[in-house]
Image 1 (cartoon, rainbow, N blue to C red):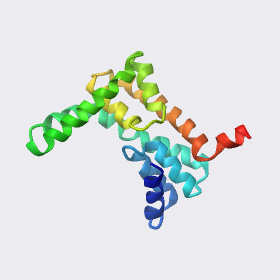
Image 2 (image 1 turned 90 degrees about the vertical axis):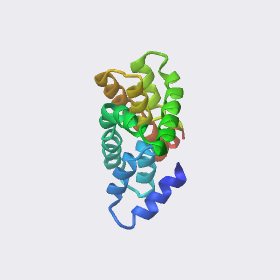
Image 3 (image 1 turned 180 degrees about the horizontal axis):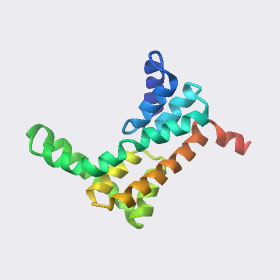
Image 4 (image 1 turned 30 degrees about the vertical axis):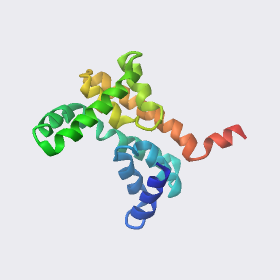
Length: 166
C-alpha cells in the first residue's frame, strides 16, 4: 500500500493540491483513509487538515455501496463478461463475513476499524450489503470503524506512535 500511496503522491501531487490528492486517495477502494493518511504524511499535509479529508473521502462512497451494490451485482451477473468477476467479489466478501461473527454491529465496526489488508469501509459495506444488514446499523458501524482506522493510521503515518513510546 505504501508504494501505491507514494505513486499517487508523486503523480497527482504535480497537478493538483496536496489536499485534493489526500481526498481522492481516501475515496478509493483498498487505499481508503489508510492510504490517504500515508499520502498526507508524504505530502506534508498538516494532520488536522488530513484527518477530515480522509474521513469524508472514505465515508462518501459507503452509503452508495450499502444501498446499490446488490442491485448492481444482480445486473452485472446478466453479462457473461462480468458474471465471473462479480461472483468472485461476492465470494471474497462473504469469506470476510466471518469477522462479523461477534455480532453484526461490533464485528463490522472492528472489521472496518482495524487497518489490515482486505478490510476497510468498502469491503465492510459490501459485506454488510450482502448480509442484508440494517442500513442505519451498518452505516454507523462503518462510520465509527473509519474513525477508529483513522486514529490508528494517524499514529502510524505521522510517527506519533514513535513519539509516544520514546
